[in-house]
Every structure is written in C-alpha cells, then in structure tokens.
Length: 559
Image 1: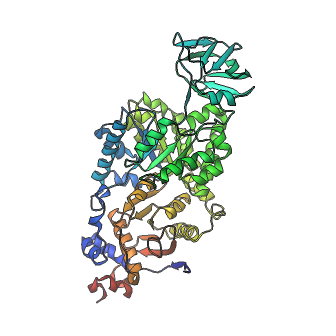
Image 2: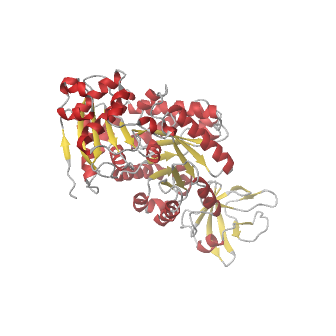
Image 3: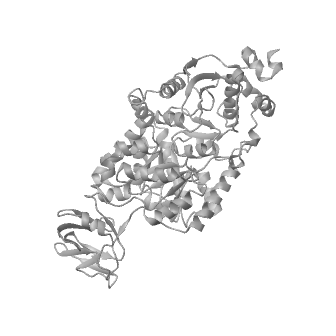
C-alpha cells in the first residue's frame, strides 16, 4: 500500500472540543469518540489530578535520574525526590538483594499510581569488575620503581605479589600494558609475563588493599560483559516492572547484541537497553554501539580512570553529538554534585559541570552516591533542577541547540517520519505553538522530535504503558497513556485531534483561544514508525468547526 504524506495547515474543528473540556464537558465528548480513558491501566491513571509538582516539570526539558540507596529507599524520600524533579529512578545492582530491589520497585510503582505520571526505572547491572584478592596483612605499600606480580595463585598477597583471579586477563596482558589499581591511584606497567602471571614495574606507588578494583585500559577484556551475577540480576529484573537495563563496561557491539538476545527471549522483550560508556574500547567503536542501543550513558567515573582526565570532556561532547544525530537519548553521569554527599550545597565547579552537560545537549543528568548514600538527597535533586532551570532559561542554550538543528542531523535518516518531525519542529517555532503533540506506539517519532530540541514541550500520547515509562528519560518529553482503541477511519482526524487537545488542556498547555498546538500522527492508525500526518490545531470557538466534526456526535455544535 502506498503511504501518503499529509501536511494539512487549517484549523481542525476538533480543537474546539478543548473549550468544552475546559468548561467541564470532557466526559461527554470523550464518550462520543469512544475515548474510554477510565479503562486505561491504573498504574498511570488518566483521570488522576495532576500533582502540584507537574508545573515545575513542564518548566524543564532535561530529565533527572537519581540512584536509590539507603539514603532514599523509604516511600517518604522517594516522594520527595519525585516532587523535587526526578523522572527516572536508578537501581544499582552492585548493591542490595533482590528482595530489596523488589520492594523499591513496588514503592516506585505506587508513587506512579498516586500521581498518575509515568516514572521510569533503570536496572543498572554491575558488569565484569576486576578485583585483586586479599593480603596477609589486609594491605601492602608499593613503592615507585619496585617490581610487583599479579598471578592466579590462591594465597594471600604481600608487598611483592597478589592474586588476580582472572586467568584470561593475565593471558591477554602483554609487555608495556598498563594496570590501574584502586580507581587509578596506583599505576603499574607490565615488564614480562609467563604461564602463571605477569610481572610489573610500579609507576605510581601507594597502598593497595584487599579486593581493590583493577582497570586494564590498554586491552579489550576477553570475557562476556555479563557475569554470572549479572545474568541472575538480569533474569530477576526482567520479571519486575523495570523499563531500562544498563550494561556496564561495554567494550564492543557484540556485548549489546548478547544482552539484546537475552532480553528479546524474556517476558519483557520491550525493555530498553542502555550502554554505559566507560572503556576506551567502547569510545573507539562508539558509532556501532550507539546504533545497537536504545540509550547511552557517559559513565565518567571509570572512563576518567581509563582515559586521560583531560580527554573526558571532549569524549562527552562527541558522544552527545553522535547520539543526538542518531536520535538516541544520552545520559551524563558520575560525580556531578559529589560534594553534596556530605554538604548541603555544591561547589561552583560542580554546578558548572552540570551546566556543561546541558549545553553539550544531554537528554538527562544523573545522581549516584549523592542520592543513594548522601546526607542530602532531596537537596541534591533540587539543586540539580535549579541548575537545569537556569541554564535552559539562557538564550545561549537555545541558540546552541538551534545551531545543531537542520537537515545535517537527518542526513543519514531520510524517512517520512523524519521529514514530518523536522517540519513539525520548524512549524512549532515559526507560529509560536504551545506544545508539540505526538501520537506514538513505540516512541520512534518522539525520539526524533526530542533529538531536534523543539522550543515547546513534547506531549507523547501512547497506548503502551512501557513506551510511556521509557520516554520519561528523553529530553523535553512528557508521556501520557491512552486506552488502546481503534479509531473510526471515517472520522480519524476529528477523533485523533480531539483526544490530543483534550490531554493538552488537562495539562494546562492549551488555555486560551489564541493557543496553538502542532500534532503528528500516523496512518494506518497504530502502525509503529508510520508518522505521516501533521496538523496545526488552534484553540478556536464553535463557529470555526468544520463540518467533519459533526460526525463526532456533538450535534449541537453543527446546528
């Protein structure tokens, strides 16, 4: 079947339904167009009144992730973090039991139900973290220039050697390769190797203690990205109400493919996958990794250990630009407000760090220990939101994004959906629209719209609960769940646009007769990635309704 592209720029009569909705007649016309919103899943109750925090959410486009831990695991604190601006909660599977994670997920879903607002949950897998064994005295002092050996002998270490229980790593290391211990505090270089281990020279000395982490920046680790613990955690997470899975220490595209295969064969094949970029090898193959992922996290902690610190800001900017060009959401994470673990206020440098991520174009910024184990989790989220609000009010922020928008972003993406979305973005700006409304099944069009950074909120309407939650991570996007249904093809425009305007009125995005929305949808209705309709919807009175609205059933409007 040939697919047609409609660009229809006249006032649809369905827009006037919003005036009746605002006057308290929502249920009357909802019934007439078979929008049985009350039958939608109760996790995201469409009829729930919006929380007081909703206006603040609409005033920011960059999303906030917060890690949940001992400092933020109570229902009361989760409520405070949500009210302060959190859009997605991160569960770190490096710590805690499955029972604890299950309880947290239940609390977050209850919070979601209370507020009628989709909330994303990210399950962050630990990944293959390399660690040394133990020492006979718990630690040892290494001096610059001395020799030190890593082997796989199951005995306590001392000042001359320690166990590295990863024989495949020992076999892969070669002369001149670098090993970093304890987040880079100690630096050693391989001088020779044999069948049992490697001998090194200490380049930067210090104290090495039990089970400290080891990084190998110069080699690709020849092991699966999923450890036995990761596989068990993943199997558990996929039985729960999670929306994203983050894979740590990704090195190559095959790592994502392995994870994708497992997820596709699970009970929740729609769960989105995020690659954490914290290895130089991933940076070198970043384009292929981005193409295979649903999201990217610039995890600057380990990335800053394995790369020169001065290279990390450049890598961050490069990855963000690539993700935007591909329509893939990107999160910047690690040590953003580190001092707020112990202090109620951040340093100026930390505020600048958050701001830099925003100016670079990140979809979201994340808090780790600040919200998981810090003394001021609510204050940290609030401060991050304040920085976001201030930066997004800066004209230069808008100019920086506008400079990146255009066909250059779409030069490798030339589908009908891309063309319609770019047109919608440009039209919304030209006519000072109040909102860009996107009907979406799987979120494809919404991701494209978000990557183009329109200067109005993106209201995503979807029949899929999973899509609504996953989109909570994307820049400028606010999703709302619609009850699954089939629209009458004879009145498709009136039905679709009437539903869109109704929700926009509920959110307070369309209030005055002069307000305008830009709406995109796809025909046949419900086909993923088929956006081919664009309508400009002004808020106008009944006199402006076209005859096709009479078929909706509001007969008195056509008298």
